[in-house]
Length: 221
Image (cartoon, rainbow, N blue to C red; front, side):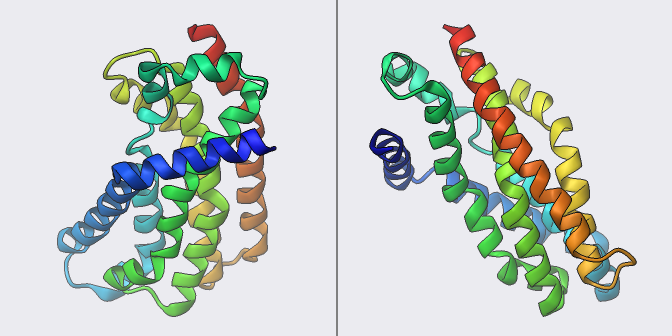
């Protein structure tokens, strides 16, 4: 457990010092959410109706920012070789890196939704609903992305390949995330139903990603 927490702290410290992934994801999220209203026009009713979809789509794209460096940086500086030979199981090392990436990327996106929701004319209830769904769904997005990052860890400029691999796998999370947010705004389905499915997708993705990511890293060596 101490080695697991040390790896999480290491990645959080590196993210804070470099200032890259989490800040760029948040900035990209803001840019997408700010540009869409200009494309749709000043119809506030339309914006509020499709606001959850806009925020979720922006979150999916923002999550992809920096994923290619999740394991590639460790491959370049030799840290990955240390992880492969360390007493800590590689599966737990993958889980630690997923957790650190989510804390620096997915969590800030969810927490900033009440601010960005103003740009798409969301009601306070809608902002809370989207924030809750992002808290439940972004771990799954990060986990899915981690598998792609492990597969492309040894490839130079593998960011495009990573996006092509993981983007289709993120569609179920996107669908149920938007469905849950719309249900909270007066849909025909109770909010708890799609939210529970969304949480189940995230938990399943985490379990699969831990083993699939570790297998991909071992195979890459």
